[in-house]
Image (cartoon, rainbow, N blue to C red; front, side):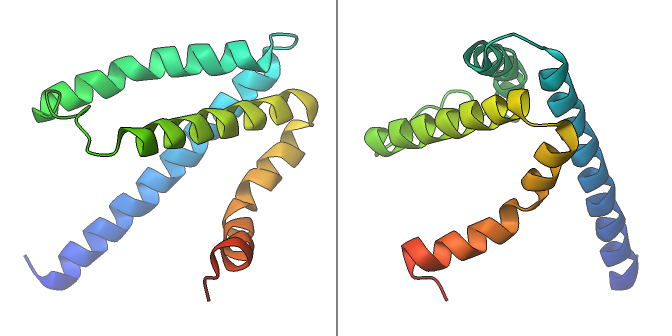
Length: 125
């Protein structure tokens, strides 16, 4: 197998995974939008609850379940979890309030916002 073939194969795999990822996330956002009057906090809870099972299965399959919850910085992990849950909750709340096309457009604008905010708040160049 040549190097060019390996690079082409990984590129095709990456493109395929990105398309699948976008499809799954748009499907999730559509389901959230279709949930109607269900509170965003409840949607966050059930999304997180049902997501934990595939994560645990994956860690067990990889043989990393025993070390998955070990950390030397527990407060940093708690802070990261709180920020993640807060971001998910606010994102889901926005989905319940915005039209779906606008919400997806803002989601695609995330990388641009990260660049701007990392420059402002973190001093990145």
